[in-house]
Image: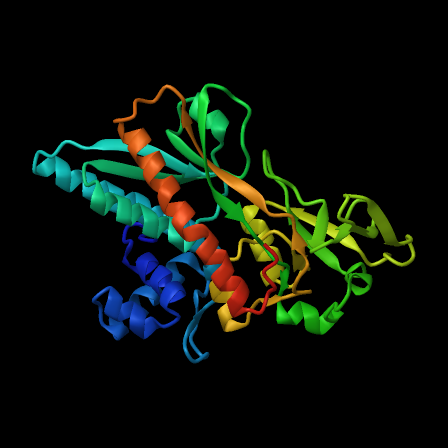
Amino acid sequence: MNETFDNLKPWRILEAIYRRKSITLASVELDISLSNASKLIGKLEKSLGIQLLKRKSRPIELTEYAIKLIPLIRDMILVADRLESVAKQLKVGRSTQTIVFSLSTTSIAPHVLRFINEFKAEYPGIEVELRTGLSHLDIKDGKADVVQMSYKPDYAELTKLPCGRCFNFMVASPVYLEKYGVPKTIDELVRHKLIFRRKDFYPECHALINRDKVFDLDRMELFTVDANGKKHIERKFSVDESAGFKKIYSSDYSSFASVMTAEGISVDLPASFIQDKLSEGTLVPVLPGWHREPWRKFIIFPAKTPEDSAVSIFAHWYQKRELEDSEKRWKTVFRKFGIPITD
């Protein structure tokens, strides 16, 4: 029998190595010997038929294949932990309420898991089942109770709680920049490949901004906007001038994989999601000061939800926590990596 998914321990070790950047620290966190951790990963590699660790690097790192599995591994661990928690509560006769919370993205930033753990510690009688990739339509269809969205749906039967804004900046891998050059101006940027996110209901990027300057990605126009809102075109790039320019559209995690494999410059990756990659230098900022227009996030749930229900309690708690944390998160990342804060 294939034991690949019968034992979650090696998957937990992989996830911990990714977070802690060290197999030693991962072993300490999971209370397992270093030799046993390495042995379990080895058995998993043999079962999968593919290498998961770069054992010759110091410290030991995950392979690109293993990194791409991390979001799914985290989902698997969350489900397993929830199953164990509910089973224990049933054993001692504790009644719990379970709500389904989803992100509209298919990727989970570390702070989301932190928030859910904080909530569960504060409200032990409410279990939160985390999903990804659902939308407000899934609330209407009964597949989710609460969804965090990157837009405000126009439905009166849904409550929309604002929970902060998303701020991104362009990033690329050093490998890509070494091969194609580092763009210092918009004139140079139009000779590169840009990676965008495209999915249902996502606020797609059509322009880059830098204070009063705007680069229209559809019209290939660079212009300024004066105090009266009047547009003054500085440059319109011809087909020949932008011959190397290409737009690459991907889903959430695909856009991350694309920039990590040096396919282009990413426009849409959330700063909190790639902070570790920026810290280790596997991704670097490109054209600091230029970024896509920020957009607002909302917590969505049914409008007729009672105020004292588990759904309402969680939705308002999460809104408050996200409002407290979101602006601090992106501003911290911006300052750390020298990105001008214009807001």
